[in-house]
Length: 280
Image (cartoon, rainbow, N blue to C red; front, top):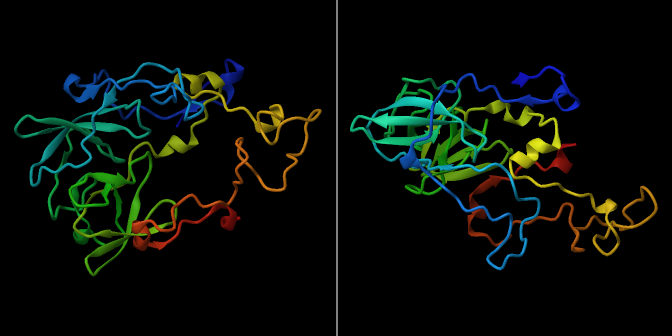
């Protein structure tokens, strides 16, 4: 974590991730980037369907290889790079035939390290193998939920899952949220923890830094007029005036479960995640 001298009010508490581990002067590979259209949170009709989005610096999307399905082929880490579209760092790896791809970089990965994907690999950070061959207690990331689909679980900065059990063709994984989920043990996962684990401790310091990232302001409901929000109106600071917490559209929220109770994959959830209300 990097802190700054208090040369201004915004710098006083500002912090940022430590980028010293990244390769200096590294430029993104042209064949592995593309431009994504910026929507500003609007749909095809031009209506805002996702609030608080818009603006921000221009950026290129790095195409990440979440599958890493070249079995038994060692890849050498060429560079470690920053990715503007994700909180984790990424690594440019090169295979023996010259093919280059971007992969998620785990903690403690260094340039010139070799990683490999196989049914069974040495227990080394960055290596990728089937869940049934990973010892219990190991930390894994970029976990497949269906064989061959590519990693979907534990992909953000500092994320990992813990292997709890292997039985009857399934592996039980404990996720960062506390949820225990059952996954087919023929799915692949990478060993280690995703890089940039200190991201959750970053203090932006000023509103402008959010705007650079394309995050627009969030206005409190109590600061609005009654026509705009159920909490609006009143002289000065007022209580919300409704018995139950509500959204700006009047829908009751707070403790309301959003997951469909009839969802097919619910049978694979062994233990639900720990709610904030129950944790207190």
